[in-house]
Image (cartoon, rainbow, N blue to C red):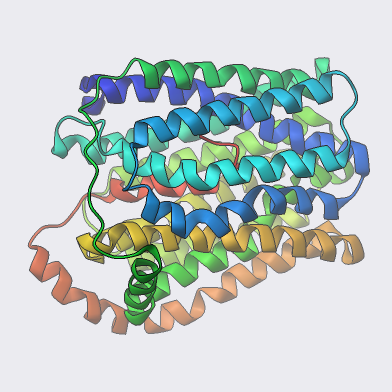
Length: 430
């Protein structure tokens, strides 16, 4: 189960990332609670998410092309150092009680810009860390499990700390957690970087990738599903502070428990997919889990019982991660190798482009109609949006069958887990 950890560089990366991710989730919860405490505005909750994600959306396609031109190890050292500086600045402002909402918006936009380069580079860098190619799927499965364990631990700890000492300490812990990432990167022994000469210009590469992805219906359908899930589904994380305080009548610890339950469900989803060995049936899985996610959101929106809400958050976490990871895995299976980076950057862009738009729209609608009806509407739209895919699935399956025959192998399911987990997490994530 842990064979990828036999690679020294990956083991260092695994440990450093594990420590850092807990800090990331702690800051995510602290920041959401801070914004709602300062403003009582659901709209501003969405605006902060928008400012942290829209730069990544705008820069994502370019970062995917440029990640192959520079030493990824050095790029990550720079992005992680800048992220540490951003978190430290935010922590100082909060701890000195000088924080204002414009500070949060501006620093979130700075972090989103950093992440625009960090995410694409980091995903490509992991491939260099595993010594044996056959251990790659195991490494990605371990990354997903690690991410969701942090998603379970971080919010729970943050909720307790916020109630005891305030939001600033959580953000400070996140700033300090970057030390683990930087130390792990500096301790790695890597081969000398060799620059690959690019034959095409960036704009032409982007155009070719876009034409390829959206000209082939199965790839187009999967990217659209990810975009719709992000647009209608992800706003639930933005609205959670309101449910925790105003509907469930709890505090920051209640928010932490809700996020922890979602993380526990996502961890279960990652393990469910990791034990599968074939892509056969993933189309049906996507339809089922997208419907499950939507219905769970509808039920959660009207729940006023804490225990029931925890159970429903667990279900939403499961449905979200399985849908995302299944789409990712199918894309990784059917895409041509020479266009893989560009297609996966479009996959990431679909998520990061729709999530901030959905967050702002949900925040604005919730100001007028209330968070319960807003989230119920989001869940309904998620459930309805999968119907066209369900109808066209037999036709899409026939289109990809020749690809499976040409490959001659059935890849392991775990290849979709890391990217899905990365994208479903807070944008402060490394």
